[in-house]
Length: 308
Image 1: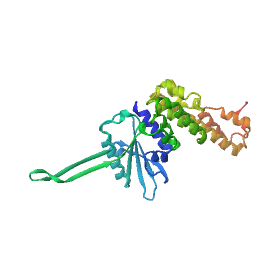
Image 2: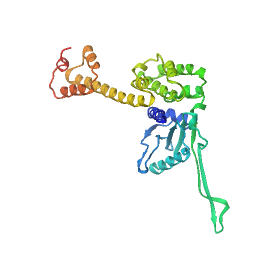
Image 3: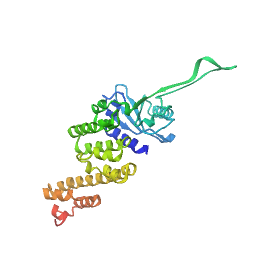
Image 4: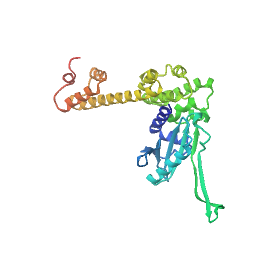
């Protein structure tokens, strides 16, 4: 059950890397972008890696944890070292713990180990050999003040309801998130961020409470992922919603291409023509119509689309 919440957080990082750098306490005022995090040569993959082009460039390695992992300190150290070897630049690691169950006694934010110098008579005191003293940033989301997250970037706003919020305060926090998204985000982005918030709220709240808190949120009925979550539950719903989203994205791209290509060869489409194309939801048909235009087989929109 941990993976859906971690996957949602990683998606937010891709869209808003600077916001997550700021929440981790890392420099966020330089250009930054997510880079490939695959370390397949050693059968490992870090969650997300951001290159920060500061005066002294560095990599920010972010991990997300919603369940227990007693080897987390060692795993983060391993990722950090492998990223340094691969990219040959400094690496800062930060782990976002999304739920208290992820904060086990062995999750410390530090890995320290050493061997004492050996002598003929065995190990002796004084000095050490093979010293390892690795530290990384631990961000316990449930301990972060809600006000700090509400005042932060859009990309980390979905964490607000699972931050340091009492049960009687969550409705007001959700309302403030909604207000910021309505005022600052584009409609599609607002839907995406609210859906992410709904998924992350599943770490703390029951589905009925989440549905009630998000009832009437503008555009949520258009979110394929949120609808799938309500129909199938969080884990299966995310997978289904992502697939639906990909299909919808392909349809929208095919519509846009047809309107653009048709406009060049057939003239600007009238409002009725645009409405008809917006009503088409089969991307294969839309692409076939674009091919017909490019092949020069039609001379008008009416000929292309047929009788209304």
